[in-house]
Length: 363
Image (cartoon, rainbow, N blue to C red; front, side, top):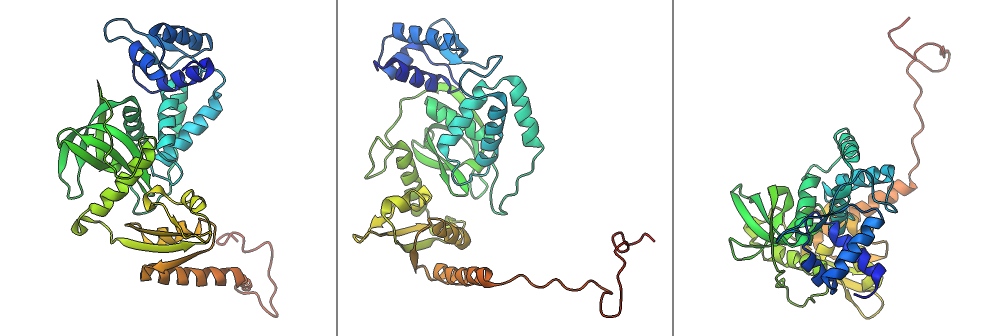
Protein backbone atom coordinates (compact mmCIF):
# COMPACT_ATOMS: atom_id res chain seq x y z
CA UNK A 1 0.00 0.00 0.00
CA UNK A 2 2.00 2.98 -1.28
CA UNK A 3 -0.59 5.71 -0.48
CA UNK A 4 0.67 7.02 2.88
CA UNK A 5 -2.59 8.69 4.12
CA UNK A 6 -4.66 5.63 3.21
CA UNK A 7 -2.09 3.36 4.83
CA UNK A 8 -2.13 5.43 8.04
CA UNK A 9 -5.93 5.24 8.21
CA UNK A 10 -5.83 1.47 7.70
CA UNK A 11 -3.11 1.13 10.33
CA UNK A 12 -5.11 3.24 12.78
CA UNK A 13 -8.21 1.13 12.13
CA UNK A 14 -6.27 -2.05 12.97
CA UNK A 15 -4.72 -0.54 16.09
CA UNK A 16 -8.13 0.53 17.38
CA UNK A 17 -9.04 -3.14 17.72
CA UNK A 18 -8.37 -3.96 21.41
CA UNK A 19 -5.44 -6.33 20.93
CA UNK A 20 -1.68 -6.17 20.44
CA UNK A 21 -0.44 -6.35 16.85
CA UNK A 22 3.03 -7.76 16.09
CA UNK A 23 4.97 -5.52 13.73
CA UNK A 24 5.38 -8.35 11.22
CA UNK A 25 1.63 -8.99 11.09
CA UNK A 26 0.90 -5.29 10.53
CA UNK A 27 3.48 -5.22 7.76
CA UNK A 28 1.87 -8.25 6.13
CA UNK A 29 -1.64 -6.76 6.41
CA UNK A 30 -0.53 -3.49 4.81
CA UNK A 31 1.94 -5.07 2.34
CA UNK A 32 4.87 -2.93 3.50
CA UNK A 33 8.15 -3.50 5.32
CA UNK A 34 8.49 -3.54 9.14
CA UNK A 35 10.60 -0.41 8.82
CA UNK A 36 7.69 1.40 7.13
CA UNK A 37 5.41 0.28 9.97
CA UNK A 38 7.80 1.81 12.52
CA UNK A 39 7.81 5.11 10.61
CA UNK A 40 4.00 5.09 10.38
CA UNK A 41 3.71 4.43 14.10
CA UNK A 42 5.88 7.49 14.73
CA UNK A 43 3.60 9.53 12.46
CA UNK A 44 0.53 8.46 14.45
CA UNK A 45 2.26 9.38 17.69
CA UNK A 46 3.10 12.80 16.26
CA UNK A 47 -0.62 13.24 15.54
CA UNK A 48 -1.44 12.50 19.17
CA UNK A 49 -2.49 8.84 19.04
CA UNK A 50 -1.12 6.98 22.10
CA UNK A 51 0.46 3.91 20.47
CA UNK A 52 2.29 1.71 22.96
CA UNK A 53 5.07 -0.68 21.89
CA UNK A 54 6.31 -3.78 23.73
CA UNK A 55 9.57 -5.57 23.05
CA UNK A 56 10.40 -9.25 22.85
CA UNK A 57 9.47 -12.22 20.69
CA UNK A 58 5.74 -11.63 21.29
CA UNK A 59 5.96 -7.86 21.38
CA UNK A 60 3.99 -5.51 19.21
CA UNK A 61 1.89 -2.35 19.06
CA UNK A 62 -1.46 -1.41 20.52
CA UNK A 63 -3.49 1.75 20.93
CA UNK A 64 -4.06 2.61 24.58
CA UNK A 65 -6.33 5.02 26.41
CA UNK A 66 -4.51 8.32 26.81
CA UNK A 67 -5.19 11.37 28.95
CA UNK A 68 -7.45 12.82 26.26
CA UNK A 69 -9.32 11.74 23.19
CA UNK A 70 -7.11 11.54 20.08
CA UNK A 71 -7.24 14.77 18.07
CA UNK A 72 -9.59 15.36 15.12
CA UNK A 73 -11.96 12.58 16.18
CA UNK A 74 -14.55 13.44 18.84
CA UNK A 75 -14.77 15.84 21.74
CA UNK A 76 -15.78 14.57 25.18
CA UNK A 77 -19.50 15.31 24.84
CA UNK A 78 -19.69 13.70 21.40
CA UNK A 79 -17.79 10.63 22.58
CA UNK A 80 -20.09 10.12 25.57
CA UNK A 81 -23.22 10.66 23.49
CA UNK A 82 -22.13 8.17 20.82
CA UNK A 83 -21.00 5.55 23.35
CA UNK A 84 -24.29 5.74 25.29
CA UNK A 85 -26.35 5.61 22.10
CA UNK A 86 -24.44 2.66 20.67
CA UNK A 87 -24.62 0.79 23.98
CA UNK A 88 -28.38 1.26 24.22
CA UNK A 89 -28.98 0.19 20.63
CA UNK A 90 -26.50 -2.67 20.60
CA UNK A 91 -27.92 -4.26 23.73
CA UNK A 92 -31.33 -4.75 22.13
CA UNK A 93 -30.44 -5.57 18.50
CA UNK A 94 -32.26 -2.49 17.23
CA UNK A 95 -32.61 -2.56 13.46
CA UNK A 96 -29.96 -0.32 11.92
CA UNK A 97 -27.42 -0.81 14.72
CA UNK A 98 -25.60 -3.62 12.97
CA UNK A 99 -22.29 -5.42 13.39
CA UNK A 100 -20.29 -2.52 11.99
CA UNK A 101 -21.72 -0.23 14.68
CA UNK A 102 -20.77 -2.73 17.39
CA UNK A 103 -17.22 -2.75 16.07
CA UNK A 104 -17.28 1.05 16.21
CA UNK A 105 -18.39 0.86 19.83
CA UNK A 106 -15.53 -1.54 20.63
CA UNK A 107 -13.01 0.86 19.09
CA UNK A 108 -14.48 3.88 20.86
CA UNK A 109 -14.47 2.27 24.30
CA UNK A 110 -10.87 1.09 23.77
CA UNK A 111 -9.59 4.68 23.72
CA UNK A 112 -12.04 6.41 26.08
CA UNK A 113 -10.24 8.01 29.02
CA UNK A 114 -11.34 6.67 32.42
CA UNK A 115 -13.28 9.85 33.28
CA UNK A 116 -15.42 9.43 30.14
CA UNK A 117 -15.93 5.72 30.77
CA UNK A 118 -17.32 6.66 34.18
CA UNK A 119 -19.74 9.18 32.64
CA UNK A 120 -20.94 6.61 30.11
CA UNK A 121 -21.55 4.05 32.87
CA UNK A 122 -23.41 6.58 35.02
CA UNK A 123 -25.71 7.57 32.15
CA UNK A 124 -26.24 3.95 31.16
CA UNK A 125 -27.18 2.89 34.70
CA UNK A 126 -29.51 5.86 35.17
CA UNK A 127 -31.71 5.05 32.17
CA UNK A 128 -34.28 2.30 31.74
CA UNK A 129 -34.93 1.21 28.13
CA UNK A 130 -38.44 0.46 26.91
CA UNK A 131 -38.22 -2.86 25.10
CA UNK A 132 -40.52 -5.45 23.57
CA UNK A 133 -41.77 -8.12 25.93
CA UNK A 134 -40.21 -10.86 23.80
CA UNK A 135 -36.90 -9.10 23.24
CA UNK A 136 -33.74 -10.33 24.94
CA UNK A 137 -31.28 -7.77 26.26
CA UNK A 138 -27.53 -8.17 25.85
CA UNK A 139 -24.69 -6.59 27.79
CA UNK A 140 -22.89 -4.23 25.39
CA UNK A 141 -19.59 -5.53 26.79
CA UNK A 142 -20.47 -8.99 25.48
CA UNK A 143 -21.06 -7.62 21.99
CA UNK A 144 -17.86 -5.58 21.93
CA UNK A 145 -15.82 -8.58 23.13
CA UNK A 146 -17.23 -10.79 20.36
CA UNK A 147 -16.82 -8.10 17.70
CA UNK A 148 -13.24 -7.32 18.72
CA UNK A 149 -12.27 -11.00 18.68
CA UNK A 150 -13.81 -11.48 15.23
CA UNK A 151 -12.02 -8.43 13.84
CA UNK A 152 -8.69 -9.34 15.48
CA UNK A 153 -8.99 -13.05 14.48
CA UNK A 154 -8.66 -14.14 18.10
CA UNK A 155 -10.13 -17.34 19.53
CA UNK A 156 -12.95 -17.06 22.07
CA UNK A 157 -14.08 -19.08 25.07
CA UNK A 158 -17.57 -18.68 26.51
CA UNK A 159 -20.37 -20.47 28.31
CA UNK A 160 -23.41 -21.23 26.20
CA UNK A 161 -27.00 -22.12 27.09
CA UNK A 162 -28.94 -23.94 24.36
CA UNK A 163 -32.67 -23.66 23.74
CA UNK A 164 -33.45 -26.66 25.96
CA UNK A 165 -31.39 -25.24 28.83
CA UNK A 166 -28.26 -27.36 28.33
CA UNK A 167 -25.11 -25.49 29.38
CA UNK A 168 -21.78 -26.09 27.67
CA UNK A 169 -18.34 -24.51 27.37
CA UNK A 170 -17.32 -23.51 23.85
CA UNK A 171 -14.07 -22.50 22.19
CA UNK A 172 -14.58 -20.95 18.76
CA UNK A 173 -12.99 -18.98 15.97
CA UNK A 174 -15.42 -16.05 15.58
CA UNK A 175 -16.32 -15.04 12.04
CA UNK A 176 -19.00 -12.33 12.16
CA UNK A 177 -21.84 -10.93 14.26
CA UNK A 178 -25.21 -10.73 12.51
CA UNK A 179 -28.21 -8.68 13.62
CA UNK A 180 -31.40 -10.60 12.74
CA UNK A 181 -34.04 -7.99 13.49
CA UNK A 182 -34.69 -8.58 17.20
CA UNK A 183 -31.63 -10.69 18.10
CA UNK A 184 -27.87 -10.88 17.63
CA UNK A 185 -26.15 -14.06 16.41
CA UNK A 186 -22.49 -15.05 16.30
CA UNK A 187 -21.32 -17.08 13.30
CA UNK A 188 -18.21 -19.02 14.33
CA UNK A 189 -16.21 -22.19 13.79
CA UNK A 190 -16.66 -24.42 16.85
CA UNK A 191 -13.33 -26.11 17.60
CA UNK A 192 -14.91 -28.76 19.84
CA UNK A 193 -17.53 -29.76 17.24
CA UNK A 194 -15.11 -29.24 14.33
CA UNK A 195 -17.85 -27.52 12.38
CA UNK A 196 -19.51 -24.14 11.83
CA UNK A 197 -22.17 -23.02 14.30
CA UNK A 198 -24.47 -20.06 14.97
CA UNK A 199 -24.92 -18.86 18.56
CA UNK A 200 -27.62 -16.61 19.97
CA UNK A 201 -25.63 -13.88 21.70
CA UNK A 202 -28.19 -13.45 24.50
CA UNK A 203 -27.33 -17.04 25.50
CA UNK A 204 -23.56 -16.40 25.56
CA UNK A 205 -22.03 -15.93 28.99
CA UNK A 206 -18.59 -14.88 30.21
CA UNK A 207 -16.93 -14.41 26.79
CA UNK A 208 -13.15 -14.38 27.01
CA UNK A 209 -10.65 -13.64 24.25
CA UNK A 210 -7.86 -16.19 24.65
CA UNK A 211 -5.17 -14.27 22.80
CA UNK A 212 -4.57 -17.18 20.41
CA UNK A 213 -4.67 -16.02 16.77
CA UNK A 214 -6.13 -18.05 13.92
CA UNK A 215 -6.13 -17.98 10.14
CA UNK A 216 -9.67 -17.31 8.86
CA UNK A 217 -11.51 -20.29 7.38
CA UNK A 218 -13.77 -19.95 4.32
CA UNK A 219 -17.42 -19.89 5.32
CA UNK A 220 -19.26 -22.77 3.57
CA UNK A 221 -22.07 -20.81 1.94
CA UNK A 222 -22.95 -21.69 -1.63
CA UNK A 223 -23.22 -18.95 -4.21
CA UNK A 224 -21.38 -16.23 -2.26
CA UNK A 225 -18.08 -14.52 -2.90
CA UNK A 226 -15.16 -14.00 -0.56
CA UNK A 227 -15.37 -10.23 -0.99
CA UNK A 228 -18.68 -9.95 0.88
CA UNK A 229 -17.99 -11.41 4.32
CA UNK A 230 -20.89 -9.78 6.17
CA UNK A 231 -23.29 -10.78 3.41
CA UNK A 232 -21.97 -14.35 3.55
CA UNK A 233 -22.54 -14.49 7.31
CA UNK A 234 -26.11 -13.21 6.97
CA UNK A 235 -26.81 -15.74 4.23
CA UNK A 236 -25.29 -18.54 6.30
CA UNK A 237 -27.47 -17.58 9.28
CA UNK A 238 -30.58 -17.50 7.10
CA UNK A 239 -29.82 -20.95 5.67
CA UNK A 240 -29.06 -22.32 9.13
CA UNK A 241 -32.42 -21.14 10.41
CA UNK A 242 -34.19 -22.80 7.51
CA UNK A 243 -32.42 -26.10 8.21
CA UNK A 244 -33.57 -26.15 11.83
CA UNK A 245 -35.92 -29.01 12.69
CA UNK A 246 -39.54 -27.85 13.05
CA UNK A 247 -39.82 -29.16 16.60
CA UNK A 248 -36.92 -26.94 17.66
CA UNK A 249 -38.39 -23.71 16.33
CA UNK A 250 -39.54 -21.34 19.01
CA UNK A 251 -42.05 -19.72 16.64
CA UNK A 252 -43.96 -20.99 13.59
CA UNK A 253 -42.29 -20.24 10.28
CA UNK A 254 -43.81 -17.70 7.91
CA UNK A 255 -43.38 -18.42 4.20
CA UNK A 256 -43.49 -14.97 2.64
CA UNK A 257 -44.49 -14.18 -0.94
CA UNK A 258 -44.52 -10.40 -1.46
CA UNK A 259 -44.43 -8.25 -4.60
CA UNK A 260 -42.94 -4.76 -4.45
CA UNK A 261 -43.47 -1.98 -6.97
CA UNK A 262 -39.84 -0.85 -6.86
CA UNK A 263 -36.44 -2.12 -8.08
CA UNK A 264 -34.88 -5.01 -6.19
CA UNK A 265 -31.90 -2.88 -5.12
CA UNK A 266 -34.21 -0.27 -3.55
CA UNK A 267 -36.18 -2.89 -1.62
CA UNK A 268 -33.16 -4.94 -0.50
CA UNK A 269 -31.55 -1.83 1.02
CA UNK A 270 -34.64 -1.32 3.20
CA UNK A 271 -35.22 -4.89 4.36
CA UNK A 272 -33.36 -6.76 7.14
CA UNK A 273 -30.64 -8.99 5.71
CA UNK A 274 -32.06 -12.18 7.23
CA UNK A 275 -35.19 -11.86 5.05
CA UNK A 276 -33.08 -12.47 1.96
CA UNK A 277 -32.89 -10.64 -1.37
CA UNK A 278 -35.89 -9.99 -3.65
CA UNK A 279 -35.69 -11.05 -7.29
CA UNK A 280 -36.49 -8.58 -10.14
CA UNK A 281 -39.72 -9.34 -12.00
CA UNK A 282 -38.57 -7.78 -15.29
CA UNK A 283 -41.16 -4.99 -15.15
CA UNK A 284 -39.48 -2.58 -12.73
CA UNK A 285 -40.71 -4.39 -9.62
CA UNK A 286 -39.44 -7.36 -7.62
CA UNK A 287 -40.69 -10.34 -5.64
CA UNK A 288 -39.57 -11.65 -2.26
CA UNK A 289 -40.04 -15.34 -1.53
CA UNK A 290 -38.50 -16.32 1.78
CA UNK A 291 -39.27 -17.72 5.22
CA UNK A 292 -38.75 -16.38 8.73
CA UNK A 293 -39.83 -16.94 12.32
CA UNK A 294 -40.60 -13.30 13.12
CA UNK A 295 -44.01 -12.20 14.37
CA UNK A 296 -46.79 -11.17 11.97
CA UNK A 297 -46.84 -7.68 13.47
CA UNK A 298 -43.11 -7.14 12.98
CA UNK A 299 -43.13 -8.47 9.41
CA UNK A 300 -46.12 -6.30 8.46
CA UNK A 301 -44.42 -3.16 9.80
CA UNK A 302 -41.12 -3.97 8.07
CA UNK A 303 -42.90 -4.42 4.74
CA UNK A 304 -44.69 -1.09 5.16
CA UNK A 305 -41.42 0.68 6.06
CA UNK A 306 -39.93 -0.20 2.66
CA UNK A 307 -41.91 2.86 1.52
CA UNK A 308 -43.25 1.64 -1.82
CA UNK A 309 -46.31 -0.13 -3.18
CA UNK A 310 -46.41 -3.82 -2.26
CA UNK A 311 -48.79 -6.75 -2.37
CA UNK A 312 -48.62 -9.74 -0.01
CA UNK A 313 -49.56 -12.99 -1.75
CA UNK A 314 -48.97 -15.12 1.32
CA UNK A 315 -49.13 -16.52 3.85
CA UNK A 316 -52.88 -16.07 4.50
CA UNK A 317 -52.42 -14.94 8.16
CA UNK A 318 -50.14 -12.12 6.97
CA UNK A 319 -52.62 -11.08 4.26
CA UNK A 320 -55.44 -11.06 6.82
CA UNK A 321 -53.37 -9.06 9.31
CA UNK A 322 -52.41 -6.47 6.66
CA UNK A 323 -56.07 -6.06 5.68
CA UNK A 324 -57.04 -5.39 9.30
CA UNK A 325 -54.09 -3.07 9.83
CA UNK A 326 -54.91 -1.15 6.66
CA UNK A 327 -58.53 -0.71 7.74
CA UNK A 328 -57.49 0.58 11.15
CA UNK A 329 -55.02 3.02 9.64
CA UNK A 330 -57.66 4.28 7.21
CA UNK A 331 -60.13 4.86 10.03
CA UNK A 332 -57.42 6.60 12.03
CA UNK A 333 -56.70 8.98 9.16
CA UNK A 334 -60.40 9.83 8.60
CA UNK A 335 -61.65 10.01 12.17
CA UNK A 336 -61.98 13.18 14.24
CA UNK A 337 -61.17 13.51 17.92
CA UNK A 338 -64.27 13.23 20.16
CA UNK A 339 -65.77 16.37 21.69
CA UNK A 340 -64.61 16.90 25.25
CA UNK A 341 -67.43 15.97 27.65
CA UNK A 342 -68.75 18.52 30.12
CA UNK A 343 -67.11 18.32 33.55
CA UNK A 344 -69.16 16.70 36.32
CA UNK A 345 -71.63 19.16 37.88
CA UNK A 346 -71.47 21.56 34.96
CA UNK A 347 -74.65 22.06 32.99
CA UNK A 348 -77.55 24.40 32.36
CA UNK A 349 -78.41 26.46 35.39
CA UNK A 350 -75.21 25.71 37.26
CA UNK A 351 -72.06 27.80 37.53
CA UNK A 352 -68.58 26.51 38.09
CA UNK A 353 -66.08 28.27 40.25
CA UNK A 354 -62.73 28.43 38.36
CA UNK A 355 -60.99 28.67 41.70
CA UNK A 356 -62.49 25.41 42.95
CA UNK A 357 -61.92 21.88 41.78
CA UNK A 358 -58.26 22.25 40.90
CA UNK A 359 -57.24 20.53 44.12
CA UNK A 360 -60.02 18.22 45.35
CA UNK A 361 -59.92 17.62 49.06
CA UNK A 362 -58.93 21.14 50.00
CA UNK A 363 -61.68 23.62 50.97
